[in-house]
Structure formats: C-alpha cells, structure tokens
Length: 237
Image (tube, rainbow, N blue to C red; front, side, top):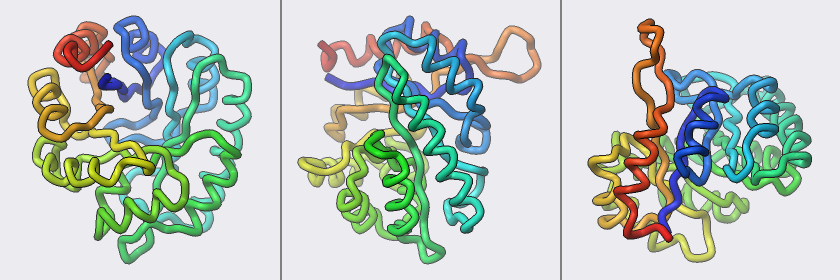
C-alpha cells in the first residue's frame, strides 16, 4: 500500500485528514516557514482527539536553516521530552520529526543522537533538513546508523517529481534502513506517477485550500485528501 501523510497546522485539519482516510499527519506550526514546533495545547488536543490517525510532531525551533545552536538544541530536547511524555498516554501512534545539520552540511550526529536518546523509543523521522545536506547518500547512511526510521525528502530537488531519480536511488538503499517518505509539491495530479516512477511507499503533502474568512488563511480540505487516496487506489488495500 501507499501510505498518505498530510501536513497540518491545526486540530480541524487533523480531524479532516482523519475523516478522509489519511494514514498519518505531520503536525506543525508556521507552515509558511516550512514548519516549526506546534503549541503543546495543540499537540495535546490532537492526541486526545484522533482515534486511528498516526501523528508526527515537528520539533523545530525556528524557520531558516537547520544548523542549530546549543541553546536551540536545548529547546528542541525539552520539546522532545514533553512530546514523549504526551505520547505515552496517546491511543494513536506518535512520532517525532526533526533534523540538525553541521555548518558543513552534514548530519549533526551528536545532536541527532541526543534528540533520539531523549525520545526514549518514540520513532524519529528526519525532516527536510535532509535535502539541505551536501551529500544525500552519506546523510542517508548516517541517519540509518542513528536508527532514524523515516526520511522526508524530495530527493534534494525543488519538488519530489524533479527529484524522482534520486528518490529511486534512495529506495534501493531502503531495505533495513529508513523509509523514504516522498514530499515536495505532491499533488492529486502527480501522486500516482510519482509512486510509479520511484517505488516509494509513503507520500507527504499539504491538502489545503483558501479558508472561509477570506483573509488568505488556508484550511485542510478533506475532499483533496480523498482525491489523493483515490489516485492511489490501485496501490492501497
């Protein structure tokens, strides 16, 4: 099957994704910044409200690059521990999403090791920091050695469609290593082709439309989620 993960930034979007049949959400704040750590009120309400949906929680203190200072890392560690404690009481599967690079563009192995240790068994996904690494294959192998379970990536390109050749190569390394979660301008119109071209078994996307207030805000659209799932019908159970 092809697993569908929807990127959301509120409780309503989470429930819309669940009602439409998504498998998982990535819960963030500040999607315009590429996603940052959501509030703990939001995390708690989401985990109390979902019944079948997996929830991945973004841990990122700010937008911009993925080279984090010692003080930023200390905040990330505190956030990881707080989500870990919430996850212990959650009925649905919970994971953490984070990524740290060195100034040279490599995976910051000591920082990632600290974060994974703080998670105490809550599964870790490396977010799009991966695509900013100078050598994606070396980054993949470093993350595999750390025990990261999943990598969100567009294959280092602006979009997953453009990165399809690299995604195929990463998939060839997947057995026994991190799952490749393809994300980056994934849409209803291209999702089936992306899966066929790369062999990925998980896709990540925003399914948002302009909200009813007319103020430029976006809301998650259950109909778009259903449409993506319909496009993947042949690859889902």
